[in-house]
Image (cartoon, rainbow over all chains, first blue to last red; front, side, top):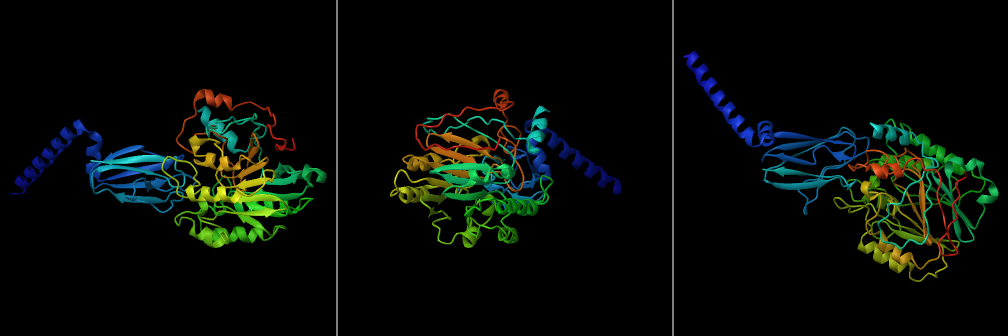
Length: 120
Length: 332
């Protein structure tokens, strides 16, 4: 009985693994995000670490400000889809993307800092 | 690798005598050559003599002959105190602001008032503003005129700034006043910034400006002050104001216009026809010269541009067509 459960679980895990590899061949980045359902963007040197980040629907993206100067993460859309409070050094902001689409954003203090999240 | 070295060099404050090159794309007809300077310091002392504004870097005022400081009107500009900043570039911004006040108080000719061109605070916290106000109480000049920096309007679109400093101002805090025949205009260009854009004055403020200066004689000396440069210092880093050309168009008729800004944490001057632009040093910490470091901004400096801002120690200056051009004095 125990053995048959073990075998069944093993088969299931193997099937999952194969599925992941297949999808990964098409678009490895998307699959990585699907698995984790979270992604990180570091703010360094007055720029967003991923100028264009692609994630799957439901992913929570967390931004961390690693600069000595405060920044914000502010949606460029009107109305704004998300807007962080000002982030001082090492402070974080998270937002969960529940709908597919392209989400441009910028730092409202240093508007030359722009990037986007693509949700698929 | 070389970029890192450059960044360290400029951050150490080694900015004296280097030339900044013109990156101006603001469409203004340029009648004069440019004179641009950068020196380390904590503010600027300005004196108007014969309708001409002379500006001196605060760091070396001790060497200045008191005769040179006499005039019809003198005032001091301080900027970018960033109270609350505590990182290695300067862990004691209160101390350096106090030092700036001491310098102002030590001047042979006391300035009649102070201009603070923004970034009073680092994070718009009430305590940060309080500390600056407390320190500035010790300054001999009791009148202080403020305009906000982007660090002063975080998270509340400038509401707190307006409550503290905006008495009698219009809109988001712009205003004008007159001192001894000189017309001063404080502008706000740190609100409603658009993604990818620069500093912004906005239509309402520009309309007000047009009206504000309409009735003045062309010979009235004009001093405009705002936080972000009202000239294109370096748009790639956001060091400029997108609708500044329209502001300048209202000021063109005046024979002497001086524009004072902060934001870039270093002093620079440019003469363009009848308009002279100055930026003041920070009382808190320096920033690299345009293009001389990787940040602020994601922009990479093209190799040829990088060379053009390196190793040049002299500049040309031809006064504009107007008789009342500005005389720059650097104490050098």
